[in-house]
Image (tube, rainbow over all chains, first blue to last red; front, side, top):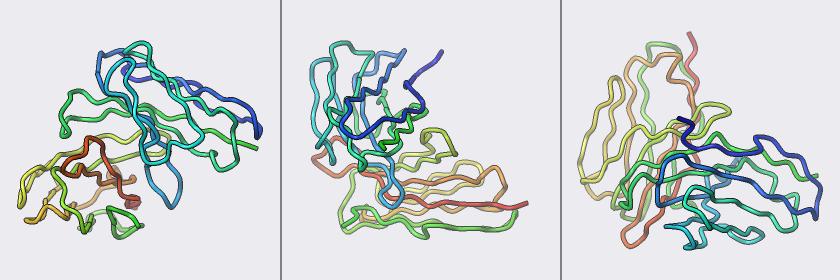
Length: 114
Length: 111
């Protein structure tokens, strides 16, 4: 039972390139989230989705695009990568629709933009 | 301005010592969660507190939600090397549906 998988786990790219980070869940959790984690800033929400075809901006959405055509997948695209987007990216799902429900995190993708 | 302030940012102690980590805010939260994150992995939920004044215990870990629901604390008794990790508090404000995270407290417990 894999739960949440993220791919790739490590990625090095160059400024200006498009990059897509993948997130897949084997459950059928409604909510999915993308966070970035940086030293000095902690975890910050980029985008989230309450269900297939429903997405909403988080705290730091600029420079990112998401889509959710299927419940189990929630890809995050950096349309034109910048050095400031070097970070560790975490995908998460929420088991229920309530705010107190458990959030499950994937293992993360470490992205370096040169 | 950080919505949730955690202190201390870093804590290095010896096995067997007690410690407390704090999570403070000027805002009211409808719930507070504590996560632990180990290197190279995603955070894992430890506990959720929802009622002001609530105290929850998880083995040697004691979590408390402030009466006014603006702060929380995590107390570890007789810390062990296995407790080493990044401890994150996260809260949901009334009217919101997403978590806001603190910057975390990095705990290192040496044998």
